[in-house]
Image (cartoon, rainbow, N blue to C red):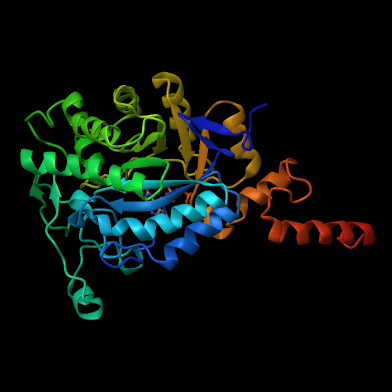
Length: 378
Ligand SMILES: Cc1cc2nc3c(=O)[nH]c(=O)nc-3n(C[C@H](O)[C@H](O)[C@H](O)COP(=O)(O)O)c2cc1C
């Protein structure tokens, strides 16, 4: 039966299992450059057995960074450091992926542990991080206390779309094998998709098809610069959890349109668009977003990834086995245990002798286990 440890292919790229490391911003870059921190942070997940390791939200233009510490890929100079990371991930058997994004009206923000509020004086004095002007489909602030973003002109829109295309070319040169576009959590592409943040009346807004156009054209721009053999994914907020916002039915339509534009997988998250209304209550339980992955998979006939509040190997295995999702993504759980895939394999009985581990560790662990069993110590 298909399960968490059954390999999976999209186009000509094969993942050794169904476990992805969800993109996790580290806020540790300077001028967008990756460094040793990123290599070690991502590298340990490859050593821990993940099938797909996504680098964090990576800005396609400098002003599209969320914080001053975001990773970037707006310049060819960024490629070399990223390439050293992808070489390591590939060598350890993981598929290296990158999440490309633009923060839009959520740009110029403080790091989560500094409050996730707009950059202020303290950032300037303590870290020399200065605020910048953000852009958005409509001049509506993200939330109370946020600056009014500059409404994007048609030229701005075209520029950002081609920045995604250029970033795809750089991602290829950097050795990534899958791209995920960050179209969720209230960042720029989501801002276009959602009627909460997009009040335009030109060809980029006014109805669902027009609101979708930005995402679709980004997919096309990436496809033009991205190998035919490599997959392209989108992370969507399946619902805004807000009256008047995106609902799952809209997202199914979006997934269909993206599939037409060459997208291979939808990573199914939710929420984050902001605004004045309080989001509807959601039941926070293990896999609370996985019903979205199941519906999108079935109704848009596209591969899906389930994410959010996942931790139990049996639960995750069932998602794949019962065709609710093709892959699962872990963020906080794999931060807690970078060897989660290897531990899950043991728990599910598919790796009895530490054979999946890198030999440098697995050989010792296998020896110890045999000894401990022989002596009846554990
Ligand atoms: C440290 C951290 C950084 C994150 N950064 C990103 C990001 O760059 N892009 C993104 O799409 N989601 C980001 N997220 C959200 C996660 O990818 C994931 O969707 C969310 O944490 C739910 O999964 P979990 O319950 O396994 O943590 C981040 C989460 C964490 C914990």
